Amino acid sequence: MNNFLSKWLSISFLNLFLVAFLGFILRYKIAYYLPFSNQRYILHSHSHFAFSGWITQSLMVLLIYYLSSKIGEQVFEKYRQLLYANLICSYGMLISFIIQGYGIFSISFSTLSIVVFIAFAIYFWKDLNWIKKKTTSILWFKAALAFGIISSIGAFSLSYLMANKITDQNWYLASVYFFLHFQYNGWFLFAGMGLLSDQLEFLIHERKKLYAIFYLFVFACIPVYFLSMLWIPFSIIIYLILIVAVISQLIAWAIMLNILSKNRIEISKQFSPQGKTLLILSAIAFTIKLLLQSGSIHPALSQLSYGFRPIIIGYLHLVLLGVTSIFIIGYIISFKLLVINKLLLTGIIVFVSGIIINELLLMVQGVEAMSYTAIPYINEMLLGAALVLLSGTIIIFFGNLRQPNRSR
Image (cartoon, rainbow, N blue to C red; front, top):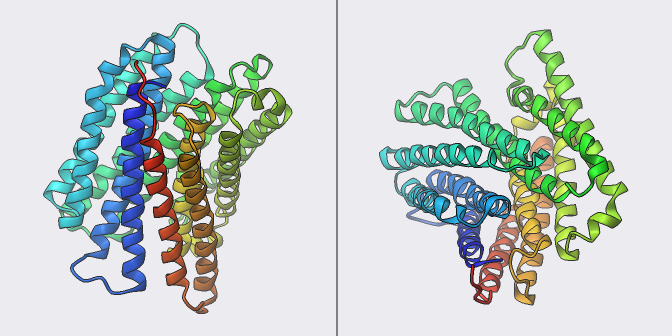
């Protein structure tokens, strides 16, 4: 742990608090009356800032730290300006979306954030080539950067539709799901798997399996996008490719779980107990995510799931909170990238509890929506879950501020 890491992770945790705060406002506005606020505008701000200000910012910091451990701490200065640029764009989106929704300023900041990411991807890709020892983690990172750039096609398409007031539902959903898919199934997933694989490289006898896992996930990533588009008729060939891709993901994850289980004693020595618990929770969430995704291969189930907003929200929160956010925090705790204190751990426990409560309530709300039955006070209970999440982020932030000063 050094000053660079401590500073930028503190900013990430502040951003996580702001994401949770906007989420709380959204839930409050659903349950009660909140004048002088536009629900849709706040939702756009919440989602864009969560992707850019919290997850992408945190992954960038962790990837830069990974790079510094391989080629030296001089990389901190090289990437510092890019981190500031991403932060400025993130806060620009946070504010402009609340004020105007999709407008000239919000679209401009969104576009600039993509430009910043592309610049980061180019620099990081080139620096990865300087690492002498070639490992699976390098492949994961390069794929993550590539998929992150590919996701921008969806963002540009969506901005174009909004700016020109084109309301075609199919094009709108295709753009949204394209961006979301290549963000959380591409950039987020592959960056996280790269960080995890780097910590498993000591398992020399498992390296062939680690490579197999990577190639299976890479093969599946592009076809699996069409799971979000099953209301559009596809040829039987595309549908068969989609089935193979879904099976490939399940096989790859089964291999990874087998590696983790078979080598759990050796792995436990590398991970802190608290961090290991968080990573197990993230793995459970990812397993649920894969099973739900695989189930949607049936067109009727896909139309059913994508036809109910609570199910979509629950799925997105499962991926972004249950899988990705818990993984990021678990990774930081596992390898003691920050000094762990009781206040920080308390905040993490509260935050994770809020995620679990939120997901259970969203699941109940989804079942409620499909059966067309009303559950009393479900919106108030979801507001309570949002308050737990918000409280956890506040405690995490102040717990992290207790980090001792250290020189680089």
